[in-house]
Image (cartoon, rainbow, N blue to C red):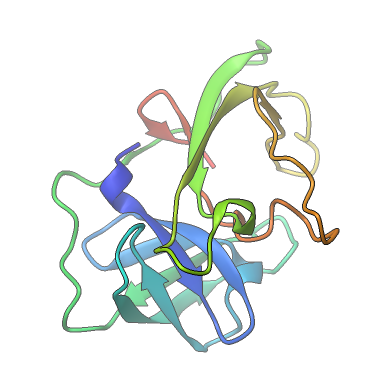
Length: 168
């Protein structure tokens, strides 16, 4: 995972996370972005917002709950380095190490730039297999919020890596 490729994704009424997989292409979750709507991407610690449009969108909450955004803003500067390598789990062995990074609301502060939360855990490949979803067993879990909202809000769309491979 390359930290300069982790971004926040913000729509009119939604917030999530994403990962830059090409010079102007961002992978996120379909339920983060409204169908065919303009959205924005933000880099952690940077106050700049960059316009993006939905290039493709799967089914929110479905087996293909993913979306690709095209960053259309002329001010956007693509991250350095190669795009991520893709992979999939081809084992049933439990405890496959993984990591992901995103921007959940639980660690954001209103007077500060967007912040990143990085998590590590393991995947048990058989868990969630029928529904085509990986279930991550986290080593650390964010604390519940004082107002009762989900501490995970804003994390949807974060890319999951197993080793150097983007797997989910």
